[in-house]
Length: 430
Image (cartoon, rainbow, N blue to C red):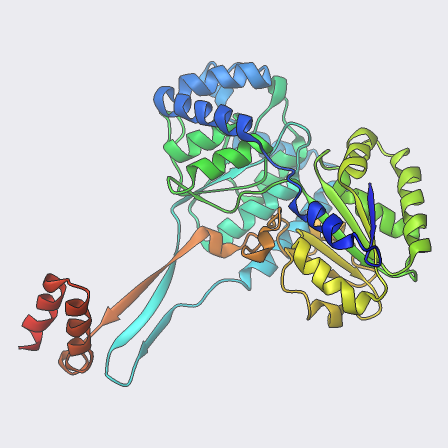
């Protein structure tokens, strides 16, 4: 864990080093993924079968070996403990309500020349959703990806998920039942992304691929962007907590560890104006890690990538630091979180106040937990219904509106050296 202070003469250099540190896939991953994608494109289902046997220890033989049925998902839902079923249903209802409010409106109007202009929104035909099944299986991620797609109006929802040794997570299957997924395929990794993008004899291609995964999945999405739409290239998880000494140190320590336990390359950052509180949080992190079932992962993340920054004035200094990190998750555990949020331009999602831990946002708050990482919040947003939709503009002119704007179009076409463009306008003007 690195501890920095804005009063240190070396702070600017040290801070730049933290900002520029890479925690994502290297060239070896890129090369391996390129090989996998070439194989899937050339050999289709045969390649999927070979990779699934190699990486998951699972044999894709008969047709029934390839998929998880709707009946299996329903059975998983029916056998859940009441508490778990109720939690999934609550999460689904809140996610659905939040994303229904995101639906864009079509536009259709006539301007002062008489030209009719506008745009219509339409869903993609098919979406592929990646659901991890290796280090951890997340029913919450299935809900966060599938529900916005359904709200957008996508007709075909396809899930790909690895099932090591043939094992699947019943909570994931129950979530698929709640969300109304159409197909679940027992394939994962970069090869699954390739199958969704290119299509195989068994798996029909899709238009958009979303969902979290490991470095190989993220790299496959990056390489296939353009062949298929993607939500984003997501890297390791991040949390940045701005907290004063009025907080309970145990609460803040737990918040920081909520992301550290995801992966050894995750990053947790604390910005505070009290060195004593910083030391207390660091101490509580050490105590809490020792009690976690995920201790090995959390310890590696905190030791290698954790950062504590002590500032003199939170309200004056913290916003610029937050904007520089452009983190996936930002907690503002301070007296005036709204005031600070108004100064923050770059963040995937912001959690306001001492009673709003990021972990609630992962499950039941409503906004999507698929968020930009690796400073991409500078130019990217979290997953929404818009990731499953596209906008088509339209134009309709009559004689009067064409006469009003056509001559300018012809003039600009000539200026650009495109006489055929100009002629297509000028013939109508005559």
